[in-house]
Every structure is written in C-alpha cells, then in structure tokens.
Length: 482
View 1 (cartoon, rainbow, N blue to C red):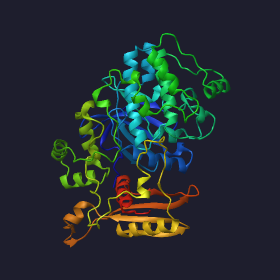
View 2: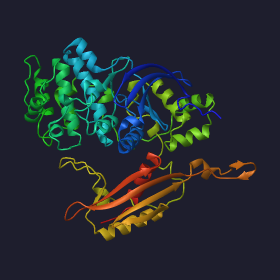
View 3: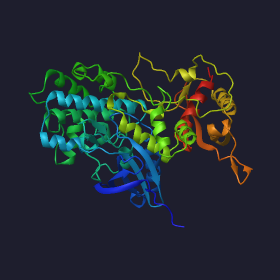
View 4: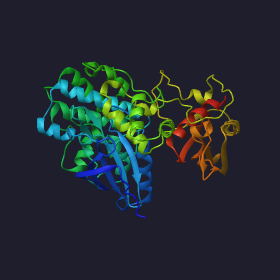
C-alpha cells in the first residue's frame, strides 16, 4: 500500500527562500484555500540529534502562540528525513528590504512598526520565550503593512554555536553580553536588538557597523555610536536607554510602554499589556467550529482536540479559518487559549486550598524589586517537607513516579480524552474498547539555589504541551509548603 504524502493537505508552490537547514515554499491549504508558508528542515543538515530535538520541541511550543504581530505556526509534520513547519504566509517580505528601499522612515511610521514589535516581544517574554536574533530580516510585513515577528524560539535554537559561522546570524544586532560570550539569555538581549532596529528605522543605517569583526565587537561592547541630529528629542532619549551596555540597567518592555515617545498614537489594541498564554481562557469560536464541521470533520473530535490542544487536520483547519477571518483588532489571544483550564482534567479532585503559600507566592509579581526570571518553584521550606508535599500532590493527581536520584524522579501522567470519560461507547467488531490515553512524561528535580532557598524544576519529556501545563497549574494549587 502506497504511503500518504506528509503534505497531502497542501498544494506546494514556488520556493520562497533557502536556509542552512532547508528551504521555505509557499503552499495552498487544500481544505480552506488559504495560503501558508512551509519551512522544510532537513534532518541530515541539522548536524546533531540534540539540535534536531531542540528544534522539534521548541517549534511545538511556539505553535501555541497567538498574537497579531507574531508569525502563526499552524502545524509541525515530521518524517524520517524532514521536519515540515507550516506557518502563516505574509506577502510583502522583510522589513529589511523595506528600509533599504525607503531609507530612513518618517518618525510616525517608524514608531508604528516599533510599537508592534514591542507588543509582540512583550507577549513572548511573558510566555518565557526569548528570540535572541531580532533583526529586520526576521520582521515580515503582511498585506496591510503590519509587522510579524518571525522565528520566535526557532531562530535562537538554530543559531546556537553558529552565530558567526552561518548566514543566519547577524552580529550587528547582538547585545554586548552575547558577543562577549557570557551566554546571557534573558529578555534584555531582545531589548538591545530593538534599540538597533529602532535606530535603523529612524536613521536608515546601523548604530554599530564595521567590516572588521573585532572592531565591530569592540564598538558593541563599549556602546560606541552616534545619534544623528535629525532625531526628535523623544527618540534621542529612548534609543540610549535601549542601547545600555549593562543588561541590568537596560530599559524593560514595561518601561518602554511608559515612555512618552512610545505612547504617541499608540493603537487601542496595543495599549493593553499582553496576557500570559494561560490567561483569558474562553470557549472556541462557535461559527468557526460550525464551518469546520461543514467541511466534514467530526464535532466531538474537533472540540476534544481544541480542549486538549492536540494537533490534527481538524484543528489546523480551524485555526486557518479563524486567523483569516479575524482582523488584527480582535485582540491578542486566539481560540486555542479560550477554553477552561480544567478541560484536560475530567475526574473529581479534592478541594484545593486557595490561600497563597510561600511556594506559590514566589510566582507573584513583586513591584518593589526588579523582576527576575526564575524557571521553577521556589521555597524556603526544608527539602524533606517540600518533597512530602510534592508526593502528596502527585498522588492526588494520579501521577506515577520513579526515583532516579536524590530529590530527582521521572513521572508519568496518563489522562483519557474528555469524550471517553463522558461517553465510553467505543466498539470494534462488537467489542467495547477504549482508545489510548494521552500520556505526558516529565522529570522533577529539587535544587538548592541559596542557603535558604530551594527550587523545584519540572521538565516535560514527551506528550501534549498544554496537558502538561494544565497539570502544572493544578499541581501548584495543591502545594502547601510553608
């Protein structure tokens, strides 16, 4: 029997470009007729299994982001030889070419682009994704002239260790801590790149440029550049605050939002802070669901897949229809974040405590000090007390675990789809059967970060991303370490 093509739902068109690991082609989604761009990544060219695994894991996470100024990632298809990344298609090309064609932009136009970039950047930072390769070549323009940030999470993974060895990375936009090899990977590196981009928009040139790479790095590391006299006072104030050599003193996205120059003519839909990807959860769009059903998909399977964030033909069709119907002003989040957080957990659970604990309290913002990125849950409690609470929470959520080291274990969560628990009438040849459950495997490790603090880290190894995130939300609510 002849195997089906992995791209059976798409009609491939011309090649849009080539990269280190493959090429990008335009295609038509057969079911909806909407155009997409398909990035074809060759596994053999990825040099190492570790890099391939990082690319695969990161693009699956990025697929879940929905923002009007971030390129939409609809689907990831894997074969033995290639990884196909199906993305939103934008027709007007790179912001880089636009700058080359027009030279320096009028201030209002440059500000409009910058506002959209910062809004997209803030959204991704709030969802713990750092780009690390922001430049006009990675900023695309749609048919309406709106910016779309491309390659979030993909570009930084694909450039690791090859910053100057491939055509993909550009040191002109890199922060001092990056070119110094300090391996700093926080939001501040993107802020610096935004400063370079804003300078390029307003001046038609780069603040740091030299054909000699050591000289270029010296300029970047010392912050040596000149502000042209034609810049307005507001721009002359903002750019130096973006291009601060010390990353800890560099302006943040929230501070950029409060800057007078940034706030001029700020569109209404960009005036609000972008939510976290797990906030503002609502129901899927009923009209789009009806349209997908009319195309022959099963409604219960579609709803179940949307609720559990499962990628399949029905959900890809749903998101394509949703994105091509909705104007930019509809807001930050699409329907994939619009369902209840408990949609993946169908069984009864004991009442959870609602008071804040020291473990959960560390996740809340502290206005009195600068926010730091902490990946995990912090607690000053004794390790034995922490692990007692952890094991109790895991047991209450029907998670199995296996100890693999001191304060380190592998865990397995097995969850049947919602439709199975509600209506378990599944038969094959008259025999009642159950479909396989969704399975998430993850690892848990307790670290000591200081004399008085311990950090509990959870890392997903395999399984649906959002099922894991939903578990983490319920898991945190059950912890009561004081």
